[in-house]
Length: 203
Image (cartoon, rainbow, N blue to C red; front, side, top):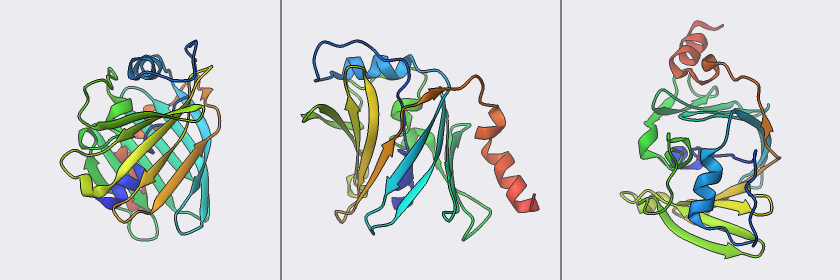
């Protein structure tokens, strides 16, 4: 479950059509509206791990319900959301992914058919930090798994990245490049069963 929390926010990369705002501080309603208007997008990301290592890759988002993180070598990771599940493929260990119900992860905050942050039990904090706004998410049934902090800039509204704090204080930070609109993202890019079958067959 700890690995799931580390990657599920992965959750979440968002920054395409911006909403105009008059101040740096963003309300949960503004952020919800921003997420709800997103079409298919892609972005490069850089991940800073708490052990000092750095990973890079490409993120793909196709709301509702679909996301994909492709890590560049030497990392052997692929994280996929689709068909109501979150899957973490790690080629170092197995062709079979670790899977979790998407609804039980904070990623569901941004992949749901209608994003509504106000009153969502996973949202446990919302505050300003310099010129950014932070939304803190946590599994209310398992707070010991840590938290995810989504970092938003304003003018225009854009998700700049996120920080994952685990139960022992370790921090993993992801920084996003601006998202780019994607003309199409095929459904096979988010098909967990097809990806698993391909890996098991060695193709």
